[in-house]
Amino acid sequence: MRVFLSRPLTPATEARARASFDVTIRASNDVLSGAEMRAALRDYDVVMPTLGDLFAASVFADVPHPRCRLLANFGVGINHIDVAAARAAGIAVTNTPGAVTDATADIALTLMLMSARRAGEGERLVRTGQWGGWHPTQMLGLHLTGKTVGIVGMGRIGQAIARRAHFGFGMTVLYVNRSAKTVDVPARQVDSLTELAAAVDVLVVATPGGPATRHLINAGVFAAMQPHARLINIARGDVVDEAALIAALNAGQIGGAGLDVYEHEPHVPDALLRRDDVVLLPHMGTSTEEVRDAMGAMVLDNIAAHLAGRPLPNLVA
Image (cartoon, rainbow, N blue to C red; front, side):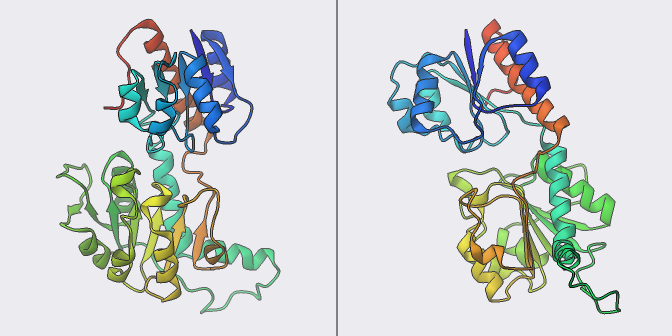
């Protein structure tokens, strides 16, 4: 049984993979090309894709009799995989839920603080030698304590953000979710996204990606937000209509944004790069060694279960 890992992983993960499987670990961090994806389906029993490896229906159609029987995704998001087409080809899909929850929530709070307190702008001021010293009206920002946060998507990550915001900063928590939700933090579900946007000081996007949520955060949402409110996106880049975000910033409809993901990664529009009221991080929501070790362990657990004929721990429905 041959296993293909599409990216270099942490030393602990690679060591376990080599000890457990007949594994090929691709040396490049670039996304898989179409030819590489098709070859992986033909030549390996298990393939580990990750973000950017676009296993569209056309890829499966070009390999009518794949050797591959499992796509063990590295990451919780699977909007880069056509799961229905994989299933039709006889290929199961797994992911790594849970492992990413706390680290991604931490990045949401990082962006909230950086945006509200103008931390990126302040660091640039110091590094460029332009800081003239403290004074009473220097770099006045938004005080997060006691404010209202709105969370779009109240899954594991949304709830982790809510706990940090409420218990750490005394924030009122409102949220929207596709279905009714019982949560373990004081929070109120509202009926619509525009109602949420109008009521909050910080709007945090924590919903899954995919066609159903593409451009969910659009011009109508920005028009509903308060002029001082911040948008934070730690979900998927295309959940936010980037052109509408830029237009809203230019028009002063919102007070700023904090982004860890982008609509056309790794491209970031110059219109965002130029703005001091936008905090930009390089998709680092899960970037700790402990979390990447845990994600790698979940991938290998899914592979081991598949090869042993056991139920898959993290089968995508």
